[in-house]
Image 1 (cartoon, rainbow, N blue to C red):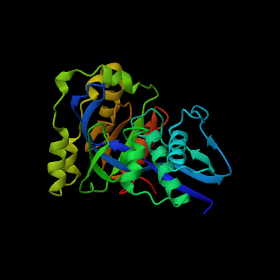
Image 2 (cartoon, rainbow, N blue to C red):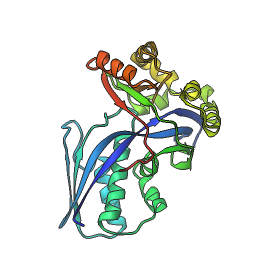
Image 3 (tube, rainbow, N blue to C red):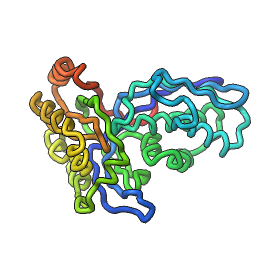
Image 4 (tube, rainbow, N blue to C red):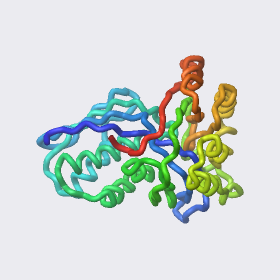
Length: 287
């Protein structure tokens, strides 16, 4: 096998609780994470030596600053592989959006190199490599519906969520994840959005009930820094979304729709005012 093509799927945080903070500054979380069909396309091709990276978005670095490059470098070094790799990325996941695009790309590179070089690493082996790149990489390797704990790397598989349409909105303005976490007040530690969501999910509840349990403590910070987040939540609800939430540290907001036509109508009305994407849950992180 000389090359392989993969889909690196984005993620949504259906819940996000902060339960504490480590001495090194990392926050400890509980989050129900979900893979979605929105994906970057990754092409990996063997070459004689070194790493090359092409990205179709000129705003994204195509060097060692890129998580895909770092994943390839780590894999080749750790497995003592003398060959090189060419990486090409077609970006569809918005950047700095709370959707895990960089982590998904790194996960796909690790997964693909394991196949391409027939190194036989287990999923756990890949996850141990992945967490060295970023806390969301282990989830992106596994995908589906998972409870993420620790810094996000401790995963427990959950019952799959029911099918629905997710309408995602990435506002034009951006926000720094570091800024959001640094501004988080300890008074919000210990909330239990995740536990409530998981209880309903375990009993087979549909989205009419699950949507009531969507929650993200980071909204308390991001909405103050970027009021546009709340404005998009209101627009989604006005269009009939069963529930709305910001994913990760934002600023992307998503709404859950059972009616595909309503979701499409929202997309058609608001596309151009923000980046609006329609997608749905999937059972794997890499395809």
